[in-house]
Image 1 (cartoon, rainbow, N blue to C red):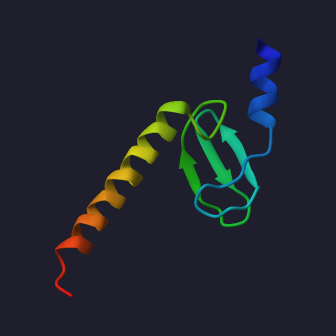
Image 2 (image 1 turned 120 degrees about the vertical axis):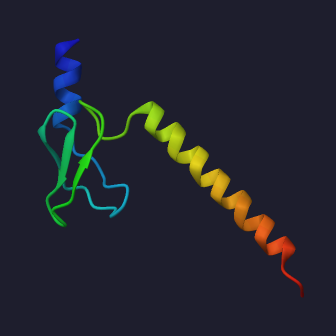
Length: 76
């Protein structure tokens, strides 16, 4: 169990906002990008947690639905 967590926390991850794979974990729950120097608070052992992915996809779907409603209301 401990080996699995240690392997996952030291694995290379890709940025969700930049697309580069230079994310490192300087502390528990903090993830730092080596190229753009952004620091993101997220999961303890992995930068993307299951609840965070669920919330992000729900927000994206709601935004897409809102955009579709706006396009249908515009006159031609």
